[in-house]
Length: 339
Ligand SMILES: *Cc1c(COP(=O)(O)O)cnc(C)c1O
Ligand code: SF4
Image (tube, rainbow, N blue to C red; front, side, top):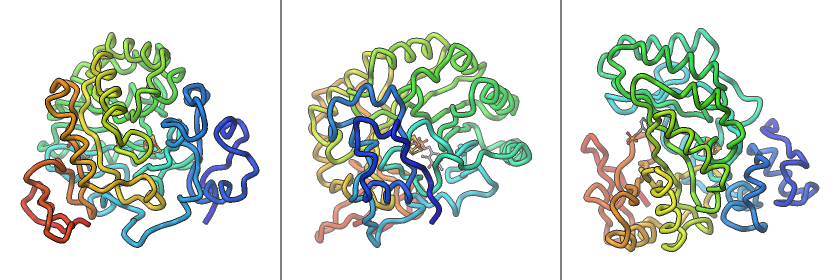
């Protein structure tokens, strides 16, 4: 397989030894990348931020139950750049590049530097797909990281999407405000001033990621009228304890960010070292209930492998079997075995 990302000594500084052959093997397989801002928040190798970005030998282990397409996007992609799983909303992925590359990424087989952006004709076809389907009321820009487009292109894209009368809500899934705050220039924040409500879903997993520079960007986004929500991934060694979660969720809420989802880790290849049993995640999230304001509490979500969508893990959608596996009911009422 061709190299997806080269390890720049600059990227590797403080988190790994540049010449480690095993880690370079990981970097041949999966994209590696961090920003100066992220490096500045790392206190020591193996801390909750370093673990999210530092390649590990464990990534070379792929389990049989892991999949290159863990949440089954491909089967629901009618045209390039669109994933249409739920009737009223679509994912729109304009780019496959990110500012950083997370070791646990559920789209790790599809993202990386030098990967592609939608061509103008493909963007046009994706917009046409939405335009002729009045049932689509929400468009979710995802990726990759859509803010990699930069101010001008994102402004144009948001304009084009907003011009479709039946699209009422816009959403952007991004890690850039947290992982690369200098990229959030006045021009880019200004481009996010929209007529129709724009929800920004920030990907953040630990309070240590929320530096003063990040706080300043969040203020700017609020001033631009964006509605701020967060999504996190529950990760072994990063945030899989009540204290870390409580600190993160309280901090986000005081910064004007409503925690929306915390995801159970997906079956992405080479990520088993990050996964914890569903039972443990459920117990952890239950321990926060009542202790924290409802404003602080995200829904704990399981994305059913195979493309059946997300369901709250701590709910009647997920029932434990006597043998420790789970019976999961999707939003259409079909059941699936999860182990
Ligand atoms: C996750 C996801 C959404 C958004 O789901 P919400 O529960 O509304 O946040 C939409 N479309 C696809 C294909 C998704 O995977
Ligand atoms: S920013 Fe998102 S899409 Fe990019 S590597 Fe991280 S988790 Fe994956």
